[in-house]
Image (cartoon, rainbow, N blue to C red; front, side, top):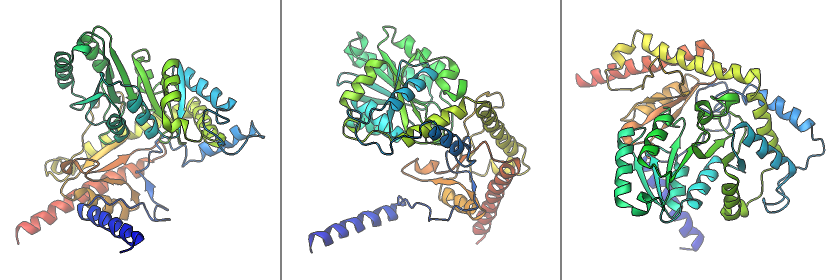
Length: 425
């Protein structure tokens, strides 16, 4: 067998293995999403789909008619343009941070942070549901990484007590504990209890040898002054040493920034190979981000944030008041984690948990009805937590949301009838 044939053979084995395990990922076919109602993408404020971002982007381009197209070099050369520096300063000021460092993706930013900043004697204590990019950064890094149960303050306290007992350098303040969190969790759609977490960690580490790091990917644009995120909404800017904000979700553009001290920015610029050996972001990428910030700071941005929260409330109310919900919620076919009406802040991400093949079936049923949703399978989530992930947008109409709820619950009832028929065979 020739070497090229051997490679093809190995690739086919990999694909067959993933197909057999159900791990094979297939992007939607071109044109297959046309005329579908989008409940799957992260365009939460509908800035991209509405054309608002495109219009503001063209306005931004018009201010710089002689812009250069292309990145040309890394940050250590011609890639460090005046426009990039000005945008980073603007972002830092808006988020009340000392500095901002632009990355091409949020994934790249998280990997850079956790593979570079924690030192061999440090400990990274992370919520068990943090994003894969944080996990990859920890895997590449040199510090000890330990999880605590998702949003569980009691388990967090136990972990901190065990860390102090086991690691003398932490106990004496000679080593740091990095606490890794998300604001809105990307799969479960719940909100991190940041104030309680900060309070608990400070009580356990009174010396102050703690570094709070948060990924605000799914709260950027949605909460806080001018959409500045959950940390700013809660006024915790001084507590969080490092914040990651991404622009490919509610913002409607692409890229990310790391908010930190100036010294931290310099360390990342000096040490992260992905920055040193990669082309800097292009003017058009940066202009789209600037355009997004302009919309977020406007009356229209505030209106859209309110629309998202109203649509979230409408969805939960529609489920709880639906005639089929009392029976559906006890069947074990789907689980919808309901949010208390008293919650003043809710994430637009809503998981419809449907194990035992239910997520794929429900996802296909909704897609056939022209409602685009995302079915999420193992190993992205545990096997008993496979789900259809709903993401509510500002431009969703009441009729679209109510129709989606009707479809989900009618599918659940049909699944129950199918089970009952099989049990009589």
